[in-house]
Length: 253
Image (tube, rainbow, N blue to C red):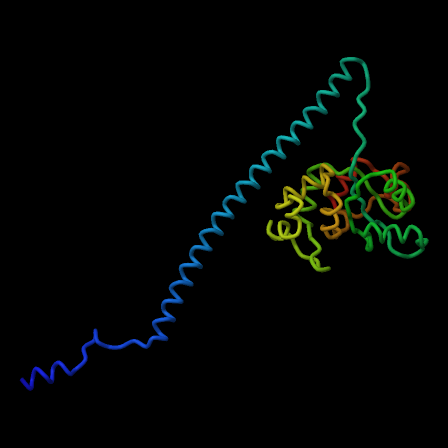
């Protein structure tokens, strides 16, 4: 009888009491773990859906670009068959590159270049072509060169040299999240959306262009082969070079 009483008084492993605070902590940790797993699952689903949206938009943009190119070819052939000349539509966007420094620049052209954010040599910016901006470009033409960039140049500039302005800081475009965080309310959530907005001069061109930091280009490969102080049509470098701007961008990008 005494032996049985002695054995019953010794607590077994199953009879060890766990403090209530530790039980609450374990329960809270388990609940937090479940919540984090649920959030991670939702985040993965949201990212997958977003990737699908971005991919579909990119496909749609490619279709638009090809349709526009086919239309240009059709109009050229139609004009040729009728013995007419095909006059393409006026460019809506220009890419402007600063060629000269600050010395010997009058106040008005200097102010215009500040407004266009062309503060250093080899800085480049996109400009929407209007009557006002074309007049501004003419006033600063001895110090800059510009032309109509094609889609390839716009895409290469943004992908290779693209930086954005966040809280007055120059931030690289490392992924689409930085674009969506600041331009998502305008429907621009990816780099391809940004390229499309610039190339087509969309309704949010001004916001998208201001979000882009001025491009810091390298000196052209082989250097400038002509005199900077002569106009492009006179064998120099400055002024409007129309579609030839794309060749210069390739050498500076």
